[in-house]
Amino acid sequence: MKKIFYLFAALTLSSCVYPYNPEIKENEAERSLVIDANILLGNTSTITLSYLQPLDIDHSLVYGRPKGEVYLEDSEGGKYPAYGYYDRYRIAPFPAKDNAQYRLTVIVDGKTYHSEWIEPTAPPEITDVKFTADDTQVFVMLSMEDHGQGSGYASLTFEEIWRFHTDYIRLYGYIPESNSVYMLMAPDKEHHWCWRKNRTGYSYNINYSALDGVVDNYAIFSFLRTSDRNHQEYNIRVKVWNLTPEQYRYRKMLEDNESIGGNLFSPEPGEVSGNVYCESDKTERVYGYVNVSRVVTKDATLNNRYDRWVAPKNLIDINPEDYLKYYENGYNPVEQITTAAGTVVGWGSGRCYDCVLAGGTLEKPSFD
Image (tube, rainbow, N blue to C red):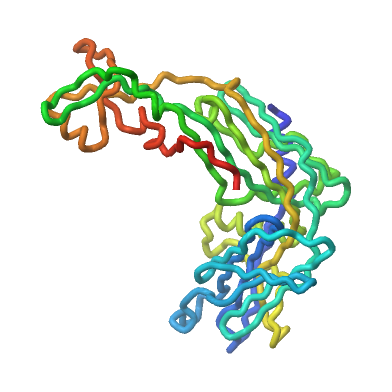
């Protein structure tokens, strides 16, 4: 596994944090607009609007968040509106056009802002997504190559779908009227197996500019071998898109801000002036960055060969006088357990015997 960690160091240590020292002139406008847009052709695109403003002004004069009209245009006359609330907007997936350029338009505070016309960049080719494991963890490994056509910077996200089972199959039932426990005629297996889906709510930024366009076996994600992802079938879909060096630097600063709490000494996202301008006043400062890229996708499936089952211990012995109270709080008798007092029927919450209550679904979901 040493190869994983050495490569991780190469990808992270080559980036820099750039301090931001804004020149705020007297009587200058109190705030500046920040536009952060990630336009992914064929996928959902996201746009975030915010304000950058000095600390020593009367904030009652500039309180609020940007709200306006946001849309994307292509050079062939197409228009794609963004939908959202206040500062966060999304553009639904639309088919990419060959040889087209794209421009983002934001109308806010009575002003119109445009990005430059941008030609989409091609992402690296994902050559492989595979799995390895050590004694405790499973690693999802990514390999990709840009064939000399990339910028050396990329971003990725992924979705997961896997089948799992509950810790127990319920063998007993409870009758509230008589406050009694009885054995079921047949084990309750209907909700023993379920599917679960997870989508990362963020993207990972990769700097491979010093690796000659080739990323080999980079660990993008890991989970414990005792995880329910290993019970039967685990599927992952990895999406990668290209970043320009400027977009990578901007996103890296946002990432650094979040990791150190965004305090007064954090680098500001406004350090990158970006590729957006005000239509009526091209000298106005507009910060952030608009990136337009095509997306490449690759799926991989893992069986349960790395499963390391740990016997659950979450059933409890309940006194008969407390049966109804626990039952009303979602507990049920499940199966026999051995205690210091002897063999009794152990109770458990719904999550330990009902996979739907544990957050699963009986039907296999699909990737977005």
